[in-house]
Length: 307
Ligand code: UDP
Ligand code: MG
Image 1 (cartoon, rainbow, N blue to C red):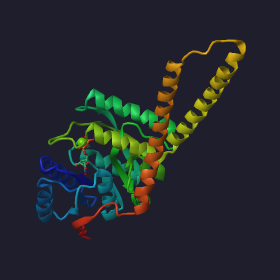
Image 2 (cartoon, helix red, strand yellow):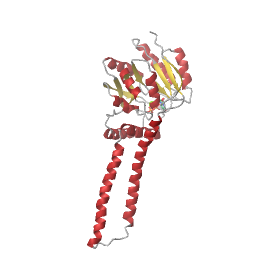
Image 3 (cartoon, protein in one colour):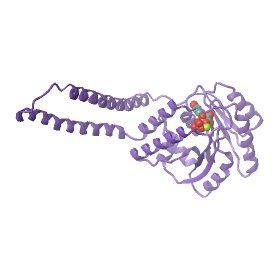
Image 4 (cartoon, helix red, strand yellow):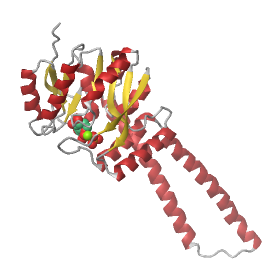
């Protein structure tokens, strides 16, 4: 399954690599399912054209850009095979690794995921932000987080069916792979730089995905604001007692401008932060209760196996 958004520059190369893969592994019948995520370039035309030449190619054309997370759900829904590999269109995930994944799948693993050894072509800032994000998420949520692992993985039908049950509209698929469980196997690979075109990610999107990751898998931030409230209330109580007792011992009470300002500003900040955290969760409740479909389809072509 290949989610693709504005990937016309790499698609010809990808078609070639996928074709080589299927020629080299005649034992298996491959379906190459493309999810066109509302591309604004001619990605869809290229896919349709290629699907006329090659009957291994099927596609789902979404009605607009729904984001990679939702595109992947469409892929789970429409993929036909006994197993499914999620692979990026930009050839950062080498298709040559797939036979190795299949080998482990045949040994009985349900989720063979590829962990990157190196991250060539990514900036120092992106590497370190993702490192920090994962360590925070790891500490505050109770599911195991797979480091340096993307969506590049092979899933058994069992795992696909499980993932299809998770239909929330705020999706953090990477956490779902851990959440559903099943037999996992790790293989390592060298992640290549993008073959062509530009990354769709920017820091705003990454930051939003990070908040998604935290809020959809743990309510720990709510707990943090409870703790904060508790600690600050206790400290305030102690301090107020001291202020009340002070005049009895003849300590002159001054204007107190600094302490009043400090208290107001500090409490204001903490309150806003807590309201913000609560708001994040209420917002998600709001979106989920609307229960809208996670994606809409313009048209699709189903895979027909030769057998
Ligand atoms: N993608 C998508 N919808 C989007 C953004 C990205 O389907 O809204 C696809 C994109 O075509 C690619 C994969 O998700 O196949 C990963 O995107 P990208 O390479 O831009 O992300 P990066 O590798 O830089 O994290
Ligand atoms: Mg990429």
